[in-house]
Amino acid sequence: MIFFGADKAKVVNDALGRAAREDRARAAATPIRGWQPLWVVDFPMFEYDEEEKRWDAMHHPFTAPEDGHEDAACSPTRRRASPRRYDMVLNGWEIGGGSVRIHRAEVQAKVFDALGIGPDEAQREVRLPAGSAAVRRAAARAASRSGWTASSP
Image 1 (cartoon, rainbow, N blue to C red):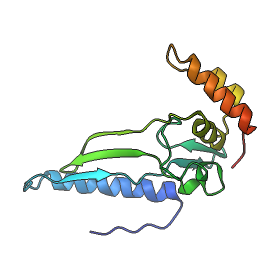
Image 2 (image 1 turned 30 degrees about the horizontal axis):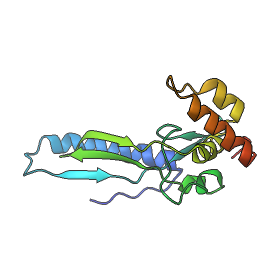
Image 3 (image 1 turned 180 degrees about the vertical axis):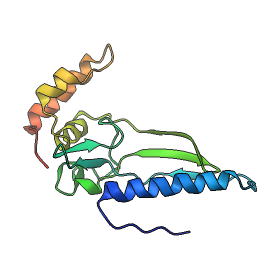
Image 4 (image 1 turned 120 degrees about the vertical axis):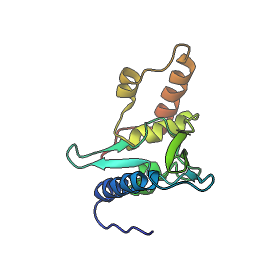
């Protein structure tokens, strides 16, 4: 079965999501022949919110971009940036998933910048676990070295 959709990404993704749920419901009534695993890795990293006129993280703002997509995250092509995220599906049911967290302060600064989160807001709003003062200091150093400023879409 092949589906095709042409509209804004959110409209197409929502429609295909509904189609997948309906297909899964029909498939649930069909006996399964063996194990049918699926590893899903192609997700968008960002989604543009038309009402708020801003970019949002599709998963969360700490998901690392794919190798080589770090600069795309802050560019006008940010819609093409892919995260290091995955879902595991077995016989049509999601059984697990996750993502690789950002572990480099300069990459975190780029992702925050792509989302319009400036250094002051990041320090004020982003709650890091106890004992993460070193991470905060590293992020602040990376931000000051790069001249990190919030940008608009």
